[in-house]
Length: 115
Length: 275
Image 1 (cartoon, one colour):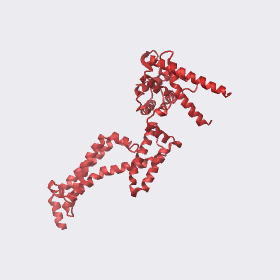
Image 2 (cartoon, each protein chain N blue to C red):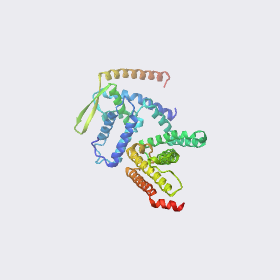
Image 3 (tube, chains in turn cyan, green):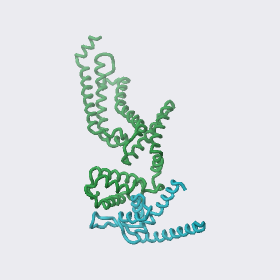
Image 4 (tube, one colour):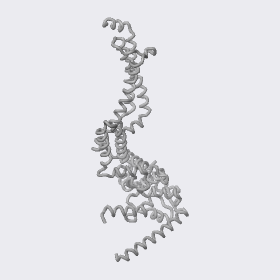
């Protein structure tokens, strides 16, 4: 596998998984943008450019998977918090199930080939 | 507006970054640019909350680097087709592809001039201008590639400038030569002293009037014209156009003066003596 091929593959995979990761991060409760980015950053290689998260958050909100509200902060400017909507929670459940099936399927393939 | 205090350089850098972000997100109905901008401002504020104020370019640059180039935030397939095309053109070796296309069209234009090759000047101009816009968006400076992209911009600008400045004056002169306009006070060209003074005065007056009008139009449309012909007009300011208007006014006064002198007994007598 060439470096360029590998880079392209990981980039595509990352982009596809980022929405799932954002929704999962929000499953535990509301978070503001910087905190979401920080938590995603804990997952190695998931977020290469942090700014990528913000257009996705905006799109998830316009598609009503998340909603947002402003809350004052004791340590800085007011912050915009995001939280899952019922629609987003339902979508996340489906996505997690799908991801689980994929993960298990790939695992079986690897096992079948003895790798 | 951001609440953290930035140095003037850092503030400029941040505004340029936000401008790039707005440009790259434009035309995406599912993404609200204002919301993303608000999040980015908040992100920068939180990330730099512990930095000593005023926050300088270096500290800001580190945060912006982590955020990454806004042009790469959108998945390829969600970006407008024109931007995808432009980016593909721009991702050639060392970003030279677009300038090469532009200069290639210029060369083709020169080779095909006898069969209407001048029409290629327009796409060459657009390619050059697009490259300049991308470079400006990125906050980079024009490098050696300016020698490849500036010729079409300069040629289009000089051609339009020539037509705008001289064209109307030539038309005014031609009208006076081809039609008898003496009934409205415009002298005929000729070889007599009166005709030479009168016609020169008329041409100078026509130039003065048109240039005054032109300078007003240019003052009014300075910003779009400056953008259209960036970077060659970047340093043009309203004061330069006011100087042009001043020259036009002087031409008008001199022209009217010459037309007046042409009617005077002195010139009439001079004409008689020469005959």
